[in-house]
Length: 137
Image 1 (tube, rainbow, N blue to C red):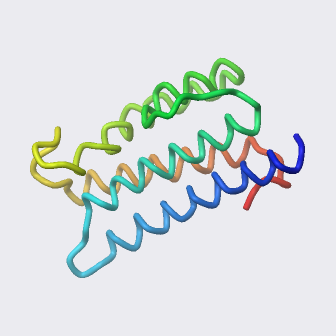
Image 2: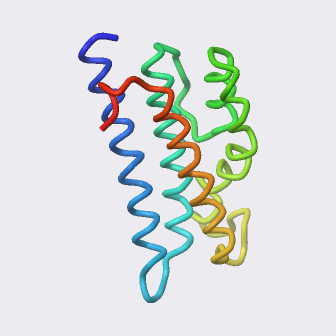
């Protein structure tokens, strides 16, 4: 992997980490913003998967569909099959609470957010374990 690709992968992973930090911070407020926090959970998983795909020179479409991204990764490394359930859980949060009349009403519960955060952290850790140390942020 050349240096330019390494830097791009690091940037995907840095942004994923910032999304996780944002999710935690938004959920920890006195009046938690769980709708925004849960969106950042989905974004963290998406960006970490895109970083892994970038590292392996696997083209991907502009998408928020984590199921699709996991399938692309799994085509190269079958261990990514283990993320299928996490992808199914997190994918809807890319848009569910962002617009009026969204799929999910009312706003997410603490339990929904906690599960989304667990799944996002799992995806990010899984991806990091499968990348060389030189591209980790």
